[in-house]
Image 1 (cartoon, helix red, strand yellow):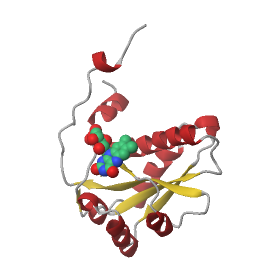
Image 2 (cartoon, rainbow, N blue to C red):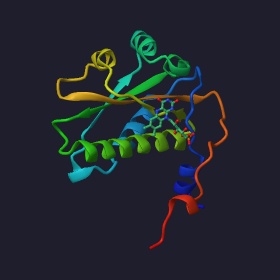
Image 3 (cartoon, helix red, strand yellow):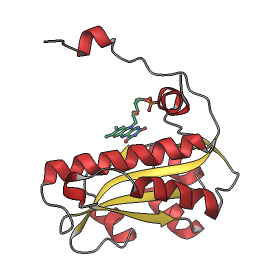
Image 4 (cartoon, rainbow, N blue to C red):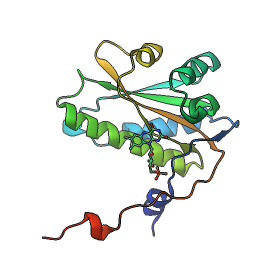
Length: 165
Ligand SMILES: Cc1cc2nc3c(=O)[nH]c(=O)nc-3n(C[C@H](O)[C@H](O)[C@H](O)COP(=O)(O)O)c2cc1C
């Protein structure tokens, strides 16, 4: 299996983190991977907000407390959808999903861990992320050094999900 296929297969959602920092260089590589995702008409309707300061992280953790992920991660990336940049809500959402998966794979390739926290609009989180009037919350991605090694959740067999016609 080549490196990309291996990374796709071995990436896991990581929900517990050790206290070690994520460096600026690592963060830049991760965000850059998001930037290179495909998007409908190449509209790139995603915006990334890096939440690194202790006070913002703790405020965000209170608004999204699930599994203490954000509280324990040294950095969380807020993913916003800029409606004005996009052209079709469904296709824009697909592009943002591609950007998030690129981010998750980049994180994994660096030996780090992350979890895709899908978030419908939460006004308090959007305010904390300083979202503009045309931007809405799409996801939160806590990133850090893995503090767990979860077993792979099962996947449906190809025979269940693929039809040859
Ligand atoms: C759209 C979307 C929303 C998700 N939201 C959450 C979430 O809110 N909390 C969480 O713990 N995991 C969330 N996940 C992660 C999934 O639970 C996880 O990807 C799935 O169980 C498969 O596990 P794996 O990522 O380790 O392969 C989300 C994943 C996607 C694609």
